[in-house]
Length: 218
Image (cartoon, rainbow, N blue to C red; front, side, top):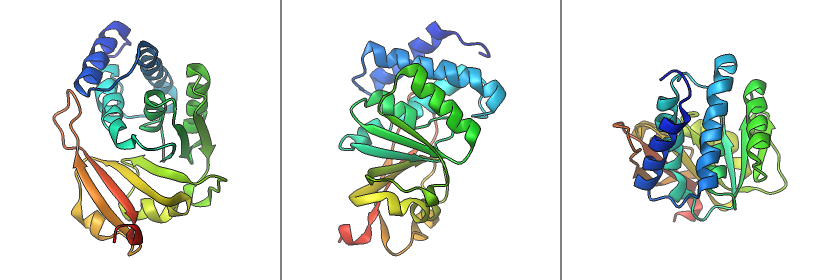
């Protein structure tokens, strides 16, 4: 499907949300579809994702990100590093309007897209930064820092560790769960959990990797 069939996409999205047992209202369903429509529209010019088929986008991007939502149940202030087209950050912000979500990327055209999404969807809980995460400074540190297929785990924690609040954690969305990446983590960081997740309509390996400061896990 190379054109945007909203009704067909709405059906797949609704079935996926039901399978994930997520409590999302009609407005949130519509916001997710609006986001998907913007991603599809802007992608032809801005190359935000290699996917061109909206039906693939709904499964591989939106439902993939929604699968992680329960892991953020206690989070109040989240940073999405290397946010790209807004995954998982925009999806988290729609699913959890009570949670503050900041998205950071170095590529201006991507953050321009994210700023447009924030405006068109009325996402008052979203903040967008155009910068290297290593150079970002904020007044309030984040209780969760997340990324989706962004970088090696050691780079992820090294670059953004200064932004994590005491007692906070990293949640990385990964495909396979490479043990060598976990073994390369710097001494001050430790993997505290590895959770396989299943994306509705997708037969592929997906994992959430949880990382905390070592002294908090002793």
